[in-house]
Length: 211
Image 1 (cartoon, rainbow, N blue to C red):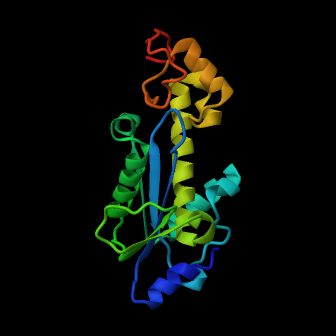
Image 2: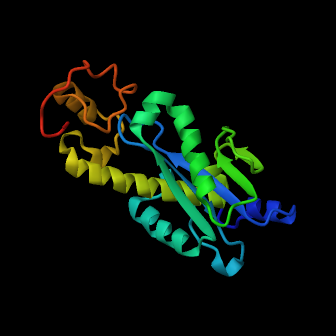
């Protein structure tokens, strides 16, 4: 997984800068969807050991690897799309937009892109989708780690602003505590209204947590 086999395959085909892209946060009830794109160096001496699907790694390991990836990467970028845009264009299109913007922010720009899943992106660069790519392709796994660490830390900061919902532990996902809080005190500014319709009565309640 960390041997960059797929990236080297495309390098041999003439693509010198192969990027991996992935996203996190499609399912939560609150917060943005976050995407990252990474171009990893192909030299053996610069290989980062332990890259894997971010969901398989401990928080400590993810944070450690995120720093290593940032230090070693030829280029990396992280992009978020907010809950208002998710509500406006839907989560699928918001995810594609986040990945597109992350790729377009890379400098130097890639000449080939590997993405996780089965979504094609509206980019001019040649691309390939790989199902379970975050567990099979090093650069996609690296992107999943950067996106996951960034989003988790963001939600921890939001937890201090909106402490009622448990964002520090659920990252905005629909846990029993989170849904119970929505029913009791309503939603806050970072909730996705299209995601909470079945739990929220539509009424704004004046509490310190949702202003």
